[in-house]
Length: 276
Length: 276
Image (cartoon, rainbow over all chains, first blue to last red; front, side):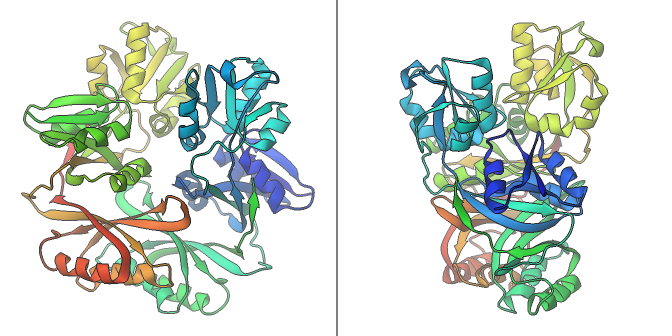
């Protein structure tokens, strides 16, 4: 059976993403840190990892990009989760009883407008959304609520007091699946890669030209600092197509000519979007 | 007198950056949130704000980019701080007494190797580096230390137990100065701007072409999601030159033709680097 590591407590959005991606039964392994997820997947065999890479409100997850380049893993797939946050508490607790609301700082931020309506409740940042729900159940707190997923309410037997309390209703998180071996995409393929442009004027323009001149669509570009080299950047791009097929194969040869470093992070099927 | 708002407690790195940027006497206003700094500067007159925009290890400060586009302020200058973290505690406390080390999660991350050598001390994330130092002084905690700046040790009268405990010794943070009115650069100018590319293949390539074709150096590029429009991006670039002078002036006209939105965030002098 495939085992899939994810960051967070049971009930985390990553766990939900893993369930939706692998439609068959898989063993789910909660991890404390993102790097633990990468290490687990790097052990190979039937092991996989799943990590968030981008949120439609907050942008890229930097840590994921930085860990991608430090491990020899392939991106084997992606799935997008429509994120909903719910206010939950112990059974019989009413919204008016709440003095504290615990959640991940990003979730608190996404629900700011709603939280302003809870006049007596202070926001308390917590390391994880599902972790906040877990703590409320374990400590049996009757004066605190958590903002977390439907799955977290189920796992920790909390009652949902208010559904969908996020302000921006266009909230999606995209997750990638990590695998020791490259996978063969079954659907429409896309490719993720990293490259370093030369430190001369026009270098990035020339690098992007290898795609533009071949009508290869650039889906996303992200720049990250190079460790130990202040103000030098590594670029991560997602493009349409498979790295073994023309025209992307030729574009990658061309990219090798005009950049100082190129690494293909994986060719995989464009992912589905599922309700969170 | 100029008043400068910064995020954090007295002794924060932003305060130090403000002191170094404005060599004359200025009034320094600590604020709880980045958005408070923007609001203060937006009131105009002699009011300014200073915020971090990029760290050489962790990359761009997303919140700053997102606030830049939501306010009508100009970037009036920049300064880069060499970041050093020091372990500090109440006088007479020894390193062996520490059971807890408080600091901002990024500072804890930057000092991970050193923290591993403190076998009995647990890392506790805190909202701010200087805030951690302040708490230790105010609560007179004899079993806890903080990772913060030299300035914080001075402000809160803590003793430095170990200097420069950060792992990556190439740690710089670049700050920008916010001003209601555009400034006239006295030194070598650079320009920051934001644009939205059309949602067609090659759009970003064409947009970057307006600079490359004129040999204008692209110093930095950053992409951020557009609020409410999943998977659409706004690009922020720093380029050499002043927006009122050729060739950048012509490049900006050209950029207007090939993109759906352009805004110049400011032309200002390339900043100095100072010791933090």
